[in-house]
Image 1 (cartoon, rainbow, N blue to C red):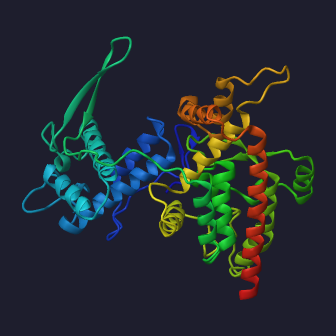
Image 2 (cartoon, rainbow, N blue to C red):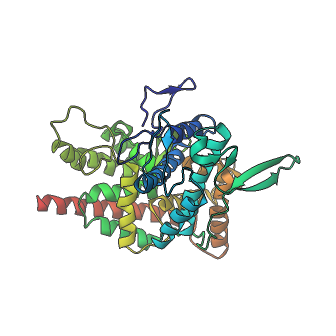
Image 3 (tube, rainbow, N blue to C red):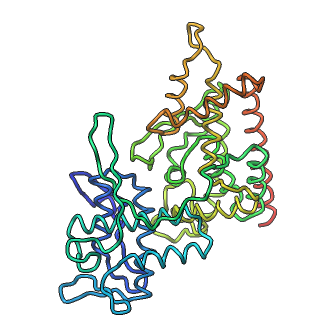
Length: 414
């Protein structure tokens, strides 16, 4: 993976993956070039490119185990399987069927097949390793072409694999309710690093941060205790800069004083205790949340950690990311029904714009369902804005008590 010293297109490009085969360590040049192109030319989010890298690594490791990829005399990849020297539909079908047998959802299977397919299309278009992926000028895997037309009548051709499964999975994603969220915190309290895990849940829920943004929080992002106490006295929110966002741009997010104070105390107590176990290291990470071994969290480790937590509490079709939906609902509810300095109700467009700013969404329309649902709830006689604010304060105070209980339990175990 590239670091800050990697300069492409006149800019520093840290975090771009370079693929290697797991068994042999052989660098996969063409897939690595494709991934770099996604960042530079197509402006894909780094989190998306890392996901593609993970899929391609799985695909090539599978080929390596079955066929043994090696270098030919021209230092190009050579592929041998049952007398064939070309990747074709049979390989994709076998991989697809193996994933289906393993119980992987059609949505996930199609995502993996599509990723490999788009890479193969790129290989044909760029003329890379034609002997491995193509026969002459033709791609060795089947292609469906779909023509779409824009409003001005211009047509574009989109290539698609015909090997995708019919998507039988519902697109519904569950947003955890308050009882389920409390269940997550209760389950987190039973495991090691209880305060850390509970706080990461709270940051996703109360500040709407994505996984990479939570990992990217640094100690110096948290204000001094005097500042936090002043915010608690005034009841004002602190707006913190967030890095490692999906589009690579920084943004400000609102943080409650209660959450800031809990983070400050965690850094001073649990995080400091964790780092003390590895005091002999030359460099210590500046990240707020660290792995069990006192290092920067890997994104997959965070997904695995909270994936297991959600399964233990039996919350289906949800993940840590869905706590952002909870944050967005509360953000929209906080603005809904309020007035500006002239006594005029805040317009829906302004509400959506503010919520999109906090969430780091590029389009306000992705947030319209939250506003529509809340307006309907108000019409049906649901909770008003003032009561929502009181419920927020009550919830945060209860969470503070839970953190103190976890801390007390951990101290008794030492």
